[in-house]
Image 1 (cartoon, rainbow, N blue to C red):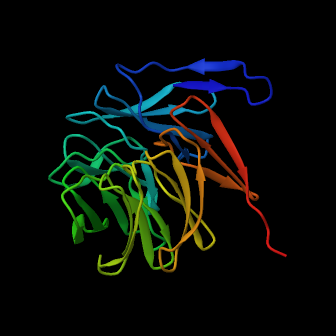
Image 2: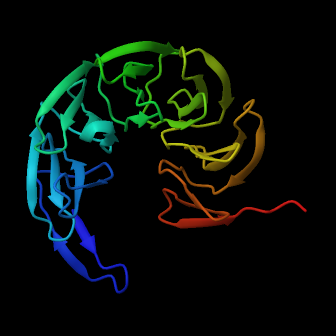
Length: 259
């Protein structure tokens, strides 16, 4: 894991794990108020916590298989993450000790999405999306459509979540009970995680296109043909959308404001 100076790009520190790092890192305030901690998983089957300023190891949480997703922060100083051991683990931020777990029954390669009420949602290789009660460590509902896995991480807005699937579709699901609201078809797998910009879902597909989809009903609002598969998630800020593609290029799109 590398830490860079944002002003000049100099490397500030490097922390080495036992294998590759596929997922993103998250940041949390240190429980004692001493600074910030960086949390991330590795293919060495451990979740690592390091000090943001120095890269010093604070603790590790060992699991039984690879960790692909980014750990999510929960209320009360807890963290949740999934892995290829088919478990969702809830651990204590202070020391990385496991508090509870939820059996997913399949590889979890994506990141867990957290709603404002603390409920959590994730799709996995077992071809389902799970809605979970974290406090009681149980599955509330299961969404299943076709027999294709979910590598995308869900985005949440209001009373619904949106997630991409290997079935070449984007799925919108009700948070309350897991029923399907709408589906949007692309021409390639949707491994990228969607981002919701007000009332528009922005997501890339392996068909080489970046889509803008209406959150309300799943109607296509716009499409931009990059021409190379998109498996990364787009970032959106201040009217800009930035996304990387498999052609090795980074694309920046400016949204047009209607008069």
